[in-house]
Image (cartoon, rainbow, N blue to C red; front, side, top):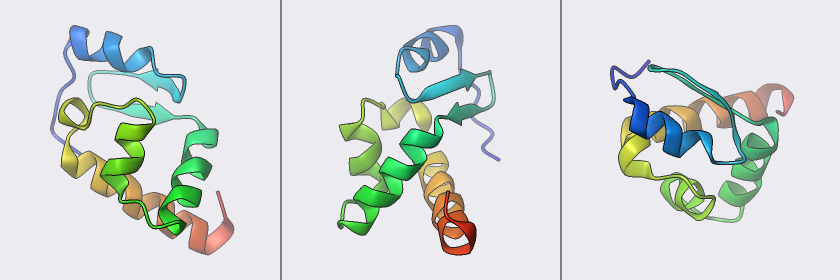
Length: 83
């Protein structure tokens, strides 16, 4: 897990995204709808960063490592059972 801590300002900004279910200082829970959208767009050739940014996320707040970890986790889950 990432060591990045989200401050109150960052949590407020991220919480306005329709694909965020819950956010704490250390973690973001994404909607299943976003996870499926991510896989669909990834299969179309978009990069993880493009997908996050085009769906209203600020990658500078989330952190590139967190985006990379989400992509890896969701691709693995999709390959095993679907999302």
